[in-house]
Length: 72
Image 1 (cartoon, rainbow, N blue to C red):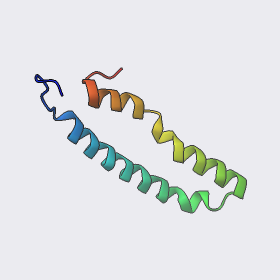
Image 2 (cartoon, helix red, strand yellow; image 1 turned 180 degrees about the horizontal axis):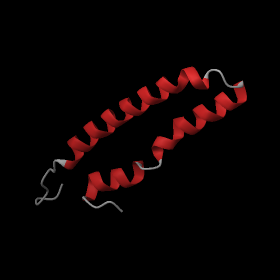
Image 3 (cartoon, one colour; image 1 turned 90 degrees about the vertical axis):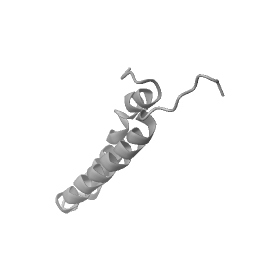
C-alpha cells in the first residue's frame, strides 16, 4: 500500500447508494409484475431479462466515480 493513500468517502457512500438504488429499482420492477404477469410468457421472459440487466448500464461509470472521483 502506498504511504500517501487516504481513504475517501466515495466508496462507502457509493456502496450504500448502490444498495439503496438497487432496492428501489427492484421494488419498481416488482410493482410492475402484476402488469407484466398478464403478458404472454415469451414477452414476460423478454421483459424480465431486459429489466434484470438494464441496471448494469450506469454501473461502469458509477464504479469509476467511486474509484477516481470522475464520471468517465
